[in-house]
Image (cartoon, helix red, strand yellow):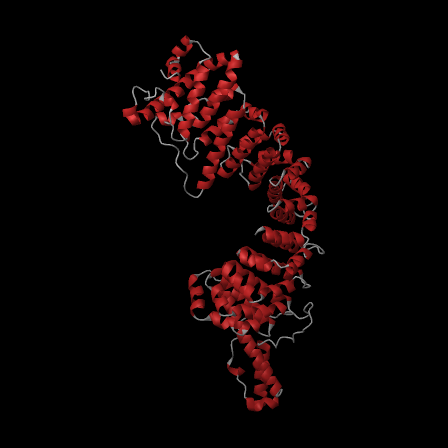
Length: 632
């Protein structure tokens, strides 16, 4: 009876507890046995107790040992799977209980190197779940030496074990950042990760590459550790030879992250042979996400030097960029615009290659279509147009013919200050290319959109602001301070270029106004003094539109300023004259750039006033200004 009951107990135990896992093979290849997971936690029953003295009655000592091993493994697996379920619970109380009761210590000892694949699998799952919820977990694991215990699982025969290990490592690196990435590198993870790139299972390869990509993004130091010739060549090899789009995308994205760090790493990536396959992946028939990653990789290589950019262009990167600019997918356009910008900004030869490929029209279309959304491709396309215009006057004329001025002026009205800044900078490049280009800007009334932006330039002050007693525009602060300051500066520089180079009298007349900064009004007055003497009709229009009156008011403000500066030394001043008889307007009473602008504006105004008879000047209150010019 004892033997019968004991045998029944053993049978009950075997029914409840799964048998030992199949022996693990040392050969690398697809696993033939599946991992079995318990459907419910094991709870010992009263009749499970066995009398070791009667072991011979059912299976002998080997059966007792086998059942004991089964029970041990099941208990551990039950513990680990239970911890996994608890780790996924959203409440903080459960998470705190797990961390306070040394669960990590139990997970970090034997389970990560356990012979049973299911134990390793679920251990990695628990570590991944805890790392995603508690930022303190990754440093704890690194300090306890758990990373070293996790790495041998990367050579396990079971695909599921490798996958779960890589998923846990990926989560740890993303949460732990640079410190944990460096610890992982120091543990010798990179050679093991490189081995995975030749593993037969493509999902394992993809996860390995994503872990490497996270390590690269963590810091420049870890990126340099990853950038070995062997590893880079393995990544390039995974860009072709199979149909797994996700694997290709992960490989090319990782290479792009490496190339973005510095010129040396970009050169290593190029030497690994990435350019040709990246250009091949930039074609129309390639899936959008993969194509966008390939274009971005080429852009990151091209951004560092003329030599690298020309290498990419010689493989056809410029044609790929132009083709991407007109694509329907936003991710492809964004990467294409980035690549186009990196090629246009390098030198005139690459700019010509881009122009020959049809970049001008494609960039204008991209800016026109996306300026309302302030998308990244709109900004990059906008700045690329500026580089093309600055490379050669003929290219600037081509931008004008392609309606680039209108497209860029639309960018000035965008809600994004970065796009406004890029548009103002590019318009300045177009305007400075030639007088005809500057005239085109003037004819398109671009100054109406630039003027309110130029007034916000740090330190800028208009005559109207001065008359109202308002201080100059303050230096921007806050998160967008740098962009805001650049916006005001580029808008002002563009207006100055238009006022200096254009012969469009309506625009110059409009800029001769108390609503623009002093230096812009000065340039407009100087240009008017140059153009009006040879154009009688323009002189009549200048009076009829009220511009002569505005110029007289500006000149009066300049005189008042000069007289105020002259009274600073009243002992040496006598009714506006110095002891040597010269006017204070000819003295050094102009201490800053604004003062210099006022002096030059007054000199230009005198030249204009000399073109009109006395009665006209008297009507506008400007007659006495000519006597000030003589120092009377």
